[in-house]
Length: 116
Image (tube, rainbow, N blue to C red; front, side, top):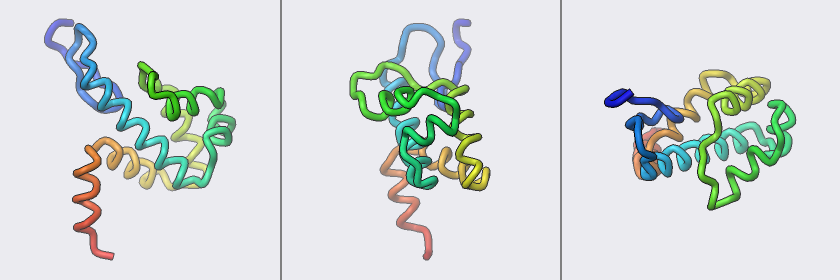
C-alpha cells in the first residue's frame, strides 16, 4: 500500500506510519462537524447518540476528552448524519460537513464574504 492514500474524514493521509498532524486535523474537523450538527439540530450529545443508536460516550468522550487519539468512524458519522436528517435537509448536513473540513481561518474568511 506504499504511496497510496487513505481518507479519514475526507482528509488524505499517507499510508504508513501515523501522521499525527493529519490525525489532529481530522479530529478537529470531525469535532467541528459534530459540534455544528448538534447546534443545528438543537440536540444534546446524549439525544444524538440515542437517535443514532450509539452509546452517548462515543460522542461525549470524543468531544470532551483532549487525550482522545482517534476520529469517529465513518459508520458512526453516517449514523449521526442519518439521525440528523430527521430534522435537517441532507444538503444542509453536507454543507455543515464541507464547512467543518476547512481550517477555521478559511471558514471565518468565507463567512465574512457572505452577503446577508
